Image 1: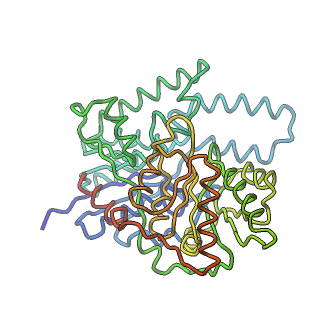
Image 2 (image 1 turned 30 degrees about the vertical axis):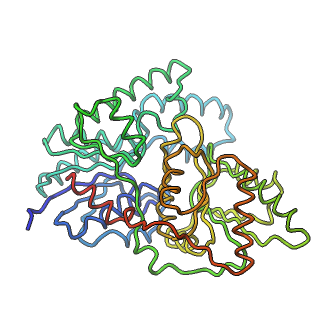
Image 3 (image 1 turned 90 degrees about the vertical axis):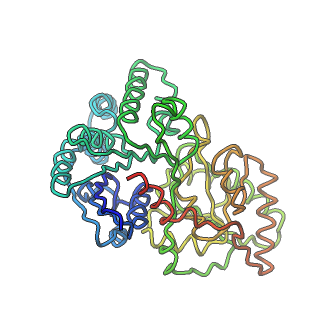
Length: 429
């Protein structure tokens, strides 16, 4: 029997926080269960102003010790202050000044003031539990600084898991194409920060092939050969007890947030075309959006006149989200577009695979998401082609009216399970 390994997992987002990164860490812990690995988790305390889903706490394996520390987050406090003080004199100018100041003092991100609390607690955990490896799940990218400092002080192995890139993140437009002096300075600093983190890590994990290629190109295979791709995953246990909801209409569900460059306008235009095609019969199609969506989605629904077909729901517990997935006839995935977006793979793709429903992806054909869907033969990818989308929806909707159950019939998705992901990551410990 192999010798037991002791691992410290540093993760800012962890149950009960219901963010996408939470699921990757929890599935890792469940996936390495029985692999002779003793795990300690270092995370933040629970706060009422951060979304919480207490059901997620039940998914943490019983043998995992969780250590929580406080943190100071001036940006979060500032956001809460803005909600109740927007009527004060000079509010707009005050917000600009404070925002610029906070941007200046919180590098690499506004969670950086968790670092001293986490390093202090982390040193105690390492010494008391004879930790061999420090595994860091990020973002926030300040979490990587915790791992870096713990490695420098203790000399333990450091494994960094980039759920999103530091450099080239599709969501950081100002850093990808800096136009002002502050952005240019920040862009240089973030590149230097990435270089420091990557060069001091014993292994670097990324969740897309695009990101692995970019890091390998920047730092060279010879100087850092241990840059590996481990995709996100789904947990088969999530679906065993999922409650199946009866859908009388053909239901297309999007589970997750819609914001930024994620747009569903082409879908709404397709619905209007199908509405005319099937007239005078009523169109029995329901599109359900569940997640923390921005106001642009609701405005788009109204501007296209498809309110009768679309429902927008706010956050629901993950258990209910799984029920929505397994009950829908088709699962909608909307890709971000623009520079650096091709390699971005939403974590929901793998949960969709686990749900066993066909996937409709709206986004570029050159993206990694489109490649996975095509390779696995699990659905469709539409790249801004309205005629193609209408044809797909027409075919699927007619099959529904005829009582045909068109489930996903693609290849075995077990390679994207939590167990598979856990094995690949644990091999680096």
